[in-house]
Length: 287
Image (cartoon, rainbow, N blue to C red; front, side, top):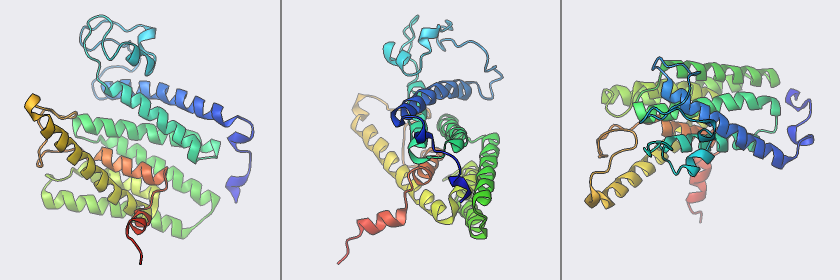
């Protein structure tokens, strides 16, 4: 097969070094993603200097070290002691871990740039939807382009009409499922952006992968939502508990961004190879 031509990265670079470099590069990219998420659609240039969002004091280079600066400052501004959103730490850490996952699951080093762009974009989509409850069309278009590139590569490696058919059905299944929920609920249950997002994700997974993604996303969404509700109930006597992505307390009727759950389900299938049918077969006892 064509993708076997050439050497793997581990043939000439120690594995521990690859993992370390992936983590370091990932957290640096995560730091940039934080800036991009904050300045997207604000008219602010990405080249502008970073500053405290509270006192507007410019940040020095030692305040911008990914993860390390946040921990050293204990999540506060050096000048005014205002809290720094924990989102900055988590985006850097998650991006770094995803870059490590790329190295672990994909031995073909020439595919790493594509994977890096994909997971970086997914982090941006998840965080942006978490805070703004919207998925910009530009992100969906870029994901669709990445899906087309992946399908073209798979066709170059091993032309297969079955592969293309499965990809198209996967994208259609994702769109149809979320479109039906959006249409039936008139936008109360799910946003139309989730239906559009499911198309490129489904194209990359194929029919069965898209099915696993949908099931996992609802399992994950239900688990996280119930956990937040339980935590909110336990802490209710200490005052109002607010959602991390909105200004209202969480109830069963709250508008919850679904893109993060969908993306987690996608990554579990795409990077982790999770198959819900296999999980169910393990969970059901056989006699």
